[in-house]
Amino acid sequence: MTGFKSDFLRVLDERGFIHQCSDNEGLDALALEGPVTAYVGYDCTGPSLHVGHLLSIMMLRWFQKTGHKPITLMGGGTTRVGDPSGKDESRKLITYEQIEDNKQSLKTVFERFVTFGDGPTDGPTDAVMPDNAEWLAGLNYIDFLREVGRHFSVNRMLSFDSVKLRLDREHELSFLEFNYMILQAYDFVELNRRHGCVLQMGGSDQWGNIINGIDLGRRMGTGQLYALTCPLLTTSSGAKMGKTAAGAVWLKAEMLSPWDYWQYWRNTEDGDVGRFLKLFTELPLDEIARLEALGGAEINEAKKVLANEATALLHGREAAEMAAETARRTFEEGQVAESLPTVEIAAGDLATGLGILTAAVQAGLATSNGEARRAVGNSALRVNDVAVSDPKAVIGEADIGPEGVIKLSFGRKKHVLLRPV
Image (cartoon, rainbow, N blue to C red; front, side):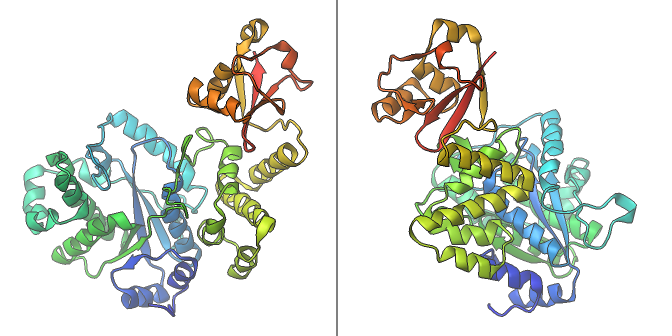
């Protein structure tokens, strides 16, 4: 459907967020009346989310900006079970203490994108962050089976991709995981009862789970519920969003610096720039169209804008500008920018001479001596902007520059400062 009347669905449609919707016309009419309450659920499997989660977070942001109330549901309860969606093997169970620590850590990410209220004085569009452990942890198993489990058909559950793919590949699916979709469906019912929530959003891999929630709500008397999913993004080359050769692109500065986050967006493939500007920034569409039309070397200017705007949303405008200035000084002027990632090394190692391959691995520029050795062979490894030609070369005290650091580079875009301690 095109020509949405509500601001929320019109914005999401124009910017490329919508993959599936359970009832376009019904949800559009509801959003036009507003405010609507919607949620996205996030399990607490780690201390940070990554860029792969950013699409649904941006959906929540636009949802609030267009006059509605977002819920960022913490999966303190469902994390104890583990979502089998998209997995070939069971998730490793983590302790309740780890789950709680992760939950507290994740809160700081959401505060960058949506505005939370302060309890009793919450406004109609202030975000809230409940934890499904509130209603799942204390469930009586027999009562839950009688009241909720009886509404689920095992035949139908076996047809969902999260189950079917695992079974087709003859990979084990535990009874614990098999219950996940029931618990997620019940979340929707509870959020409707507690917060008047009528819409669940998420990635397209969650479609079956969300539809289960709508069906359960109908059977348990909640009234009409809705589903809206965003696409699972890949880059133009087919790579999965949120993953790089160096690992996940985390959304917490303690796990990935603002500089590295800026660099991730700056290195976007040419064919993805326009699409990512629509999804991961709030720039007006006419400005995005202008940037998207840039060709040749000018496309790099559009990539810088993408990096600046995406980084500002997560880490703040000051951090984004600092990263942009660091890039300018490093790449355009060849200077050693103090805000480059810094790795401490033992001064004693420099005094005796530190092998260049070992230094590259310690700095995180290479994953192994073999990778570092190949970089030397390709003239890709440099010390203070001078290419290293001998894999047996060492760096020492003589390489320490006037700033008290050694600049180690891998290719044109990966730079680290080695600081002796």
